[in-house]
Length: 517
Image 1 (tube, rainbow, N blue to C red):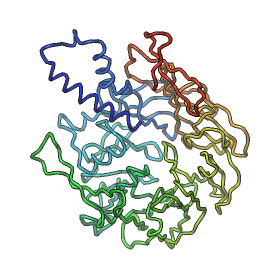
Image 2: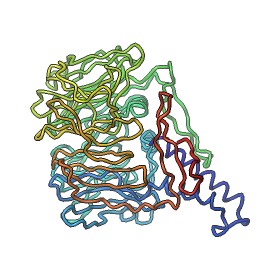
Image 3: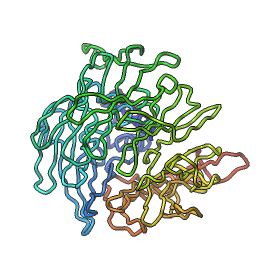
Image 4: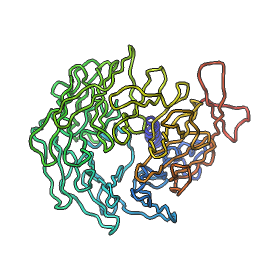
């Protein structure tokens, strides 16, 4: 997924050059079919533009909120689908807010989007309040709250915001700007900086380059479950090398200055501290950050305690720490080592540990056996049982339905495809939850107990659906993406090599003609 956008961007640039070079020689009507095929591929982003993006089921289980662009534009708009009757309506378009103005992004926001491989415009993300009544969107560095009941838009104070998020109780919004973490009270529409002391090399509330680019951690602060406290990252980049990025299309613009830790050079120093929602005295969270400088992930959910995963710089050792919000002290839950490399499980699923209700057990993913597996551990970190077999190809954790004792996971028996599977928390064999050969993804929602699953099958079928945890299809989230005139078929074949090739075959080509993927 990270590569396809860059390839498409390159295709768009090449086609733009080609169009200029051959202007006057050819028109769209006379353009060769081969060139038109690649033009279509670039302009539709591999025929993905127009598909639902980031669908979320509202807590009452009545609607799906999602983003979607047109089939040949990258501007994401906000939509709502009624699960009961399948009716769809557009909630908010960027044009409504911009009123003809151009979308403007800060250098910091551009960098964040690049590291997340976001090529879209408009509303690239949104938040749903815990009661489902409000939506939070960002556009051109400004924040807006959309009231679903009244269809009204309320602009929030300030600008240049990064990583805005509702508090769990939905009464406040936290966001970073100008190197500090701020909190906005929605009842009074007032904002205040809850941290101080930022400089050109010291910032609060945002994650550093390594975390964003290499670890998939884009957060630099975390709300406590009761919305009273914030855990905030402090990033010291005073020893990190500086690079300058110029815009070749606008040579009059001063190059952008950013910190880039080359291999073998100093990284940013990352610290954590706790503070009240109103600001005030800081309480440091203590761990040996000289031995474990990488803060890989943080979990602070309603179902469990505050936990941190830290790694050494060589990424051969990692420690899962339990942190006490009252004292800032940490103690070890579990430790893993590998003489070569410890990979992180951050492939589009919830970050482990995933605590079960009551905080008596948690789910953990590991390669300790040589293959990725999901494990169950008790509150002290002790291994209880493996939930997925070692000979099964694990891709990512989706979620858990504790009422039925069911774990939802992406993976397969065949590494060339991915399905949605279920495994019992009590241990035992898994089963395919959603059949179909191809690639599948899903997101699980605790409230309500439902999933959104997406299917991209080898025969060209695409579907995005809201389903119950029992597998019943409740609604289909419509795609407006174009369908290619020629769709290559995928042939799964086995060879004597240890690899699993999946050659593509064009429907119009020679029946025996195969092309490697």
